[in-house]
Image 1 (cartoon, rainbow over the protein chains, first blue to last red):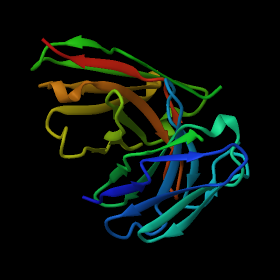
Image 2 (cartoon, rainbow over the protein chains, first blue to last red):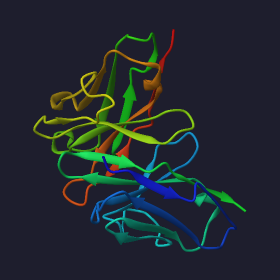
Image 3 (cartoon, rainbow over the protein chains, first blue to last red):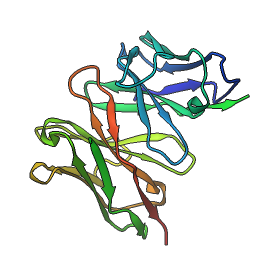
Length: 109
Length: 119
């Protein structure tokens, strides 16, 4: 089983600043990596897929990078609505397996 | 509007069973792979099951043999039959649509339904 590890667990950043979230896979997942945002009481929302492609309607301040085992989600200039929990997710083609990281909570500094 | 709406959650005793439903609308349900994902209170996300357009099914080890995912395309509905439930299965259960093609990701999520396993 591929284990996804996100860091840090909590990140405190001021509005307008840049936030960088990390996700590491226990073995290579190529570019099979997605990022989700979840706000309290809401379902997750897809932000990034294929490691670097923004989903429909996602603002350009969100960007993803990486391949293999190291991935990064960057939010270039934090807006108030960006404070949430972020999860990375890998998928393995065979056997089908979809593993999430434990999440990074992005909070207002 | 593309939408997924879950139902069927509730309180069940350990060892009991429950069937969750997910009603899809606004898209051609039969053309998409579908999933269930759960989240215990205050915890992270855990993939629970998947079903392909051809009815092929997949599970992680934590639920294999106890949970069964199915679909009824004529009713635009997804189901999760959960048997031999344990306290550790207590969570909000989300149904999610997998985007077509590659790269894969879950692009549409329902609002979730709460399952509580307790005596």
